[in-house]
Image (cartoon, rainbow, N blue to C red; front, side):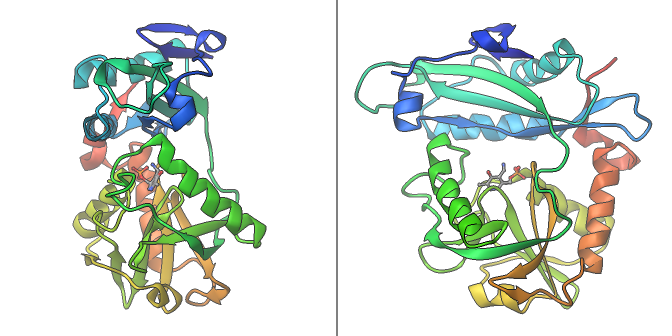
Length: 302
Ligand code: PMP
C-alpha cells in the first residue's frame, strides 16, 4: 500500500517513526477515522463527510497544540489522492494521524514537532455480529479536563483499550463508559443511542465523548429524513437497561445494534424497528442512493 508520510506518498515500509518519538513514548498525537464506500452501482468510491472529518482533526490539533501541514482543502485532497494512488475500488477506512515526531525526552506539545501521515486499509464490518452484548465498564471515561475526550487524541485510546479488554475478558463484545459522574458517556470507539417510546436519546458531546460525525449524521437523518424526535440529554446507567432499543454508532462500527447490556435483554432481544430503519437509510446515504444527501459524499474517481 501507499501511505502519505511527511509531505510525500511513499511505500508503507518507508512510513516509519523513531522509537524515541514523543508520539510513541507519551502517546502525543491525534487522528481521524474516515470511511469510503463503493456506490450502489459499483462505479464510484465516495468518501463520507471528509470535510467534517478534516475539520474535527484540525480542532483536535488546535486543542493539543499540533498543526496540519496545509489548508483544510489540501488535507481533504491528500485523502482522495491517497485513495487514487492505491487504486481503491472497495470499501475503505482512511486514518489521518498527526504525531509528535520530536525525539526529545520531556513530554511537551509544540506545533512545529507535528508530523502528518495518512494511511488506508480495506474495511467491511468493524464487529462481526448483527447484534452485540455490551457491559458498562468499570473504567471511567477520561474527563475532558484530563485528556480532552472531544478530540481524537492517540493517548486517550489507552482508556478505550482497557475497557475493551475488560469487556472481552468478561465475555462481552464491547463496553460503554460512564463519566466520572456516573452518566453514560460513549463506547470505546462509538457513541450511544437509546430508543424509548419511539424517541431517540443520546448524551451530548459535553459528556466527555468525541465530537462524533456519525452521531451528528444520524441526528440529521433521524429528524429531517425519517421524522423521529431526537433528544440530546444526560442518560443514566439504568436507563440503558430499560430502553426499547439501543445501538452504538461510529465511523468504524456504523450502526451497531446492541442485544444485551450487563446481561439485561434490550427490548425483545431482536433489532428494533427504529434501529433497522436508521440502518437502512444510513446505508443508502453512504452508498449514494439518497439524492439530497449526496453533498456528504466526495467522489474519488472522475
Ligand atoms: N467515540 C470514540 C472514542 C471514537 O473513537 C469514535 C470513532 N471515531 C466515535 C466515538 C465515533 O465517532 P465518529 O462517528 O466521528 O467516527
